[in-house]
Length: 203
Image 1 (cartoon, rainbow, N blue to C red):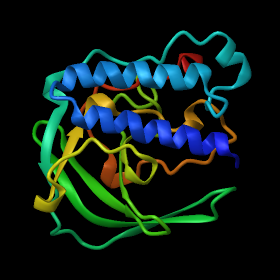
Image 2: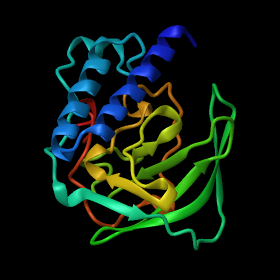
Image 3: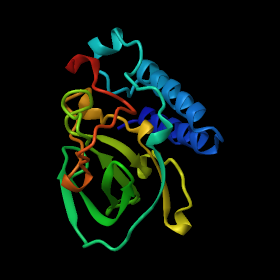
C-alpha cells in the first residue's frame, strides 16, 4: 500500500460527491464516465495491466438509460444472512445482509453491510448478460466505504440505485485481485445493458 492509493480513493470519493451533487443524472453519468477514464488512463493505481494500459482508449460504458435509475426504499424485513470473502491482502472480509431493494421490472437485490472496520453499504449486481456482455462475476453498484455512493435519503431508508453506474471490480482487469462477487441474492434474471460492460480483453 502507498500514498498513491490514498490519492486514488480521495479522487473516487470526490468524483462520486460531484455525481451526487449534479441535478441531471445523465450529465452526472457523463462526468462519472470521464472521471473513471482519466483514473484508469493516468493513475499509478489503475487496475489495468501494463499492456492494457498502453492501448487503453476508454472504458466500455453503455449510454445512459433513465429507465435504469431508481430511488429504492430498503426493505429491512429480510432474514439475516452473512457471507465472507477470503482475500490475500485484507484477510476475510465479512458482509451482513441488512435489507433488499425491489426494482420494478428487474427484480430484487440484497443490500449488504461491510461488517468490518469502516463499514459501509455494498450492493453488487449480476444480470442475465453476465459472461456475455457484462462481467461474468457481476458488477458493483454501491461500495460506500470506497466512495461509490449515488445518494438517496438514507435517513428515510432510501438509496439511489442507478444501474447506469454499475462498474466492474478490479479483478475483471487484473486476476491478481480477489474481489467479492455477487451472491445469489444479487442476481437478476433480466438483462441490464447499462453501466460498464465486458472488458475488451474478454471479448
